[in-house]
Length: 425
Image 1 (cartoon, rainbow, N blue to C red):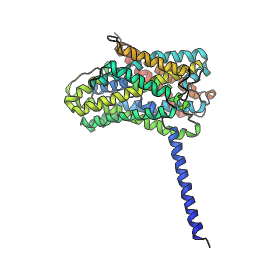
Image 2: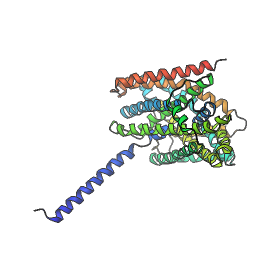
Image 3: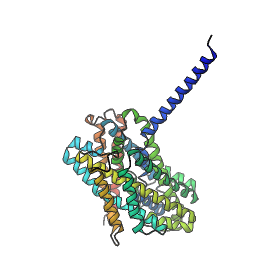
Image 4: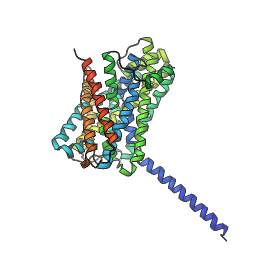
């Protein structure tokens, strides 16, 4: 006969074991969270928000399906990048260097520096625009933002930096409220988001290409791979990381849709024209109320701060990988490291340039997006080739995934070619 005390101890032991197993599962989940959410949500930066705003303002609900399609492509190629990082233990540029040589690695890194610097300027221009909505001049908001971001990244540990970035990404949820406040035609939203309809004009094709390009940015793909390596994502944790990539991409798409829908329901319906996300925030006030403008501006600030940290980080990873020097957020920020030097140099350069009166920021930003448009298919092709190369330790990719990758690349190239054709003199 079992003694009652023994039975109670047995039950208590099983409860403790189950709690420990549950805690272990939760710890395993938390250990891999970050890359998918940060890489996905950072695509909703000021340049992205401006693109989504223009998509809704200029084309109404007709082209919302492009955002849906962009999310599918984002999931596809981010999963490829994360798998490469986990199986090889190397970032994108490090793999390019190992596969095609040192010169190729440097070419990839330099191209990303050229493209990304204009994007970093766009992030700080977003900080300036958000500050001006609140009556704060750029000469105050931009340097404060630069100092705060640099301090957090250089002096903080990997996990502290990650937690702060995840907190910043939460501010993007404000756009979901804006989408509801606009009181759109939800039936038209569903049709626009799920039923592909071709653009009717050259400007429409430009909007399609720009939306795909801003969602599937080369720097975002480079970041998620290097960040997965820095976070030590392993093959064993890929199953959990896949879900995080999917969730991050879906949140990115929902926020992009909310921005486009808010502008389609208000600005497009009344024939209002804008040039930036900040213009959209101001234009929303008489149509959707002061609260909608405040939410739009707060979301713009959060998006700008998040991307102002992540884009130079992505670039610093790439340059360090090309030079074969350490690249990690856990490096001692009080000692000299090229990784931090690149990050600080890009941040300081962008801050100073944005504050200079009369500097033609728009041509710089537009030029960087053109470089991104050229880099995107090259980056996707390189990812595809690396994923199929057993030497990258990523063997085992299903044939259907390989075929789907080439089909997606062909579609992206077609959209970019249509944009270039429509933009010809």
